[in-house]
Length: 263
Length: 263
Image (cartoon, rainbow over all chains, first blue to last red; front, side, top):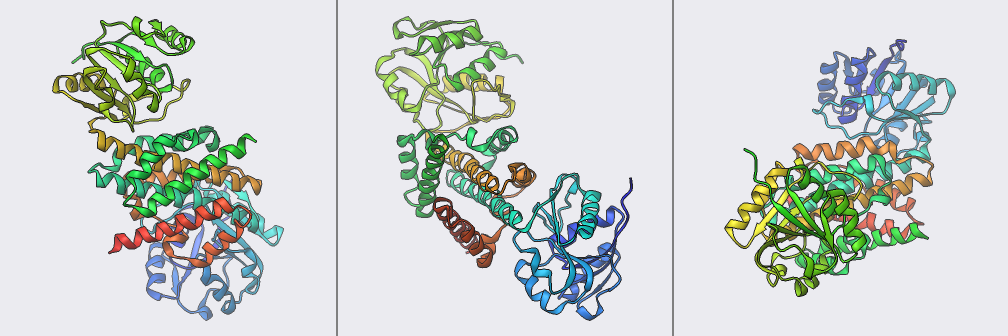
């Protein structure tokens, strides 16, 4: 069954707006307008979409089916003070902001949160991207569900509290892991070795959690409480107080975690 | 060119010994004997390999081309007090132990370190596994190089100091990242959500570093110094002091790291 095409206004022209708008257009929805505080940014995205663009609230197209707010988290509350759309469906795309922030804009509000990292120039295949949807009314939730299913096979109804937990977990699992890779790269560079040597092992670590709970496949000196190796490592980090402190604390946390599991 | 087949004795019958011995056998080398302090363990592996087995040093086959020590790191020094092989080539498989630990066993020593995690019952495709080799003489290094190339396309000559750096970096990049996944899973479970929802994002995080330096693709509230989001997250972790402390420290480290890069 072909899903009905929606007429959409984008508020925001950054990474999420760009990738989401391009994908919606590709799946036969119409992006009628792009709003951005910076007219130039609105224009750049509008040209890719062949849509109109504006930088004033008064000229926002009032005839669309859906308004998607994809701007910085802390700018959403500010936007809500100025934008009024009475009973038009408006959603934001943020992981950590409550749906209720939109309640002064319209009576029909929601969230359309694609759980992925985006860059303006790297196109994203949305097919596998989990889309977390939420709304304050059943009719709008249905609209969002149809829209989400038109671009992704992984659509989930998630309330604001769960979404906050997902966002926090994503920061820990992805942003923090990436920092571990960055530290590893720095240490290897000091010994004139490329991070390439670790990439098969990094890949295997994420492959393992496809089929196992991460706590069950934890390896390394910390979970074995192998003091000798840990002390060697801490000595190697003597001139790197920041990383040495992290090493101690994460190792301690791994051991605590495994003890709690066993209890 | 077909590489010459070697006659190998394994000292140890754990995860690394099992996977490495099975792979060497598959590539036409002969595993003539397995030694383990626990005769039962030696027997289990020897049966898989159709080799002899023993649990006494006196009965170790003295006619092999190569002796591979794959036992716990801190047991290698102890082994060296008892095992004597005069001028036979002996190597260990450890990431964090110096080659010199073997010098009382023989005049020809080395390291054969496969950079991967192993379990006894999950077979490993060694083709992409980096094998780090080292020896105290050119002739033995050549033997190890031919052996390594017979099972892997990624063979690297790495000295003991570099190997220590690689091992430390692997602990940080892999064991510590896995702990981040474990924490994320625990947080999600408290909100009745499966870790599955994060798996596409985790996959994308490791995909990105195939082509970019991790420090260049760092995202999230810490690198943006987005205090509002970080404070929200810390509040959500109020009843989880251990994770709250980690969150603070890793976020701080991400910010420090990015400032140092810019300087």
